[in-house]
Length: 319
Image 1 (cartoon, helix red, strand yellow):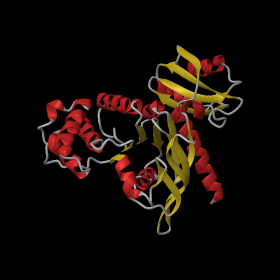
Image 2 (cartoon, rainbow, N blue to C red):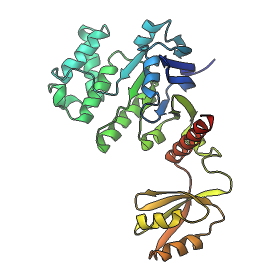
Image 3 (tube, rainbow, N blue to C red):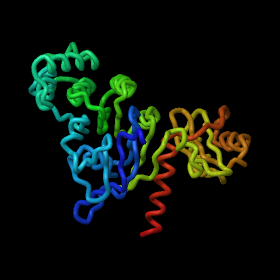
């Protein structure tokens, strides 16, 4: 017996000679938040569209709640909600009218429709905007409305394709608070995102690159992968003034594998034999007298950058 709500096995989609998704396999547990990441054009949206029954796979299988997405598509559509990458509701209708229309599409009517609509308005805090046309709402409120419409029929699985793209940080956080609440009620969430801080909040994450799933797992487990911080290497945070000048100086040091700016500091991947005294001496050479250096663990961004470079290198070798 498995608690997997979403299962993909060698899922593949080709458009002519172009392979958009190449033998992707993963599973998502019930009540979890699965973050799906990858560069633009890597296949994220195509995977979602296959899982939602919008596109039929060329090869492989996918199941939602144990049901095959191809053979049992009608049953699956009752189980899932889908919030698309772009706002896809009706700008000329009010928030209330959009919710009513969505409810009717799912077969709701009368008191049941009104109760569900009012419930979602309260959950998403849309009360002040129910009579405002959707086209006049800000990005964050438009996304709340789109989410509410996707939830009208009480789905057990919700797919969200970059739900926080283009909205401000406060609206992003509030939207994620809603997602956590839904997951706490047992809903399974499948979220595509470009934001690393959002990926850190997910129960599990998957990373797709050039149509192939490179890795899938819990964020903390992925950070422990040996290729992320190889044996004999360590990661350092260096806080100092004139960080751009410092970056150019340390990049030339033997044993420094990578150096990137991170706010007012640098993150370095270095040979663990490099001493702090050597780094401080190098910084003094360019006029930086005061610095703070301490060891850190990798971030999810470090994980994905490392794995992307490895995958790109392997592709070049194969070519």
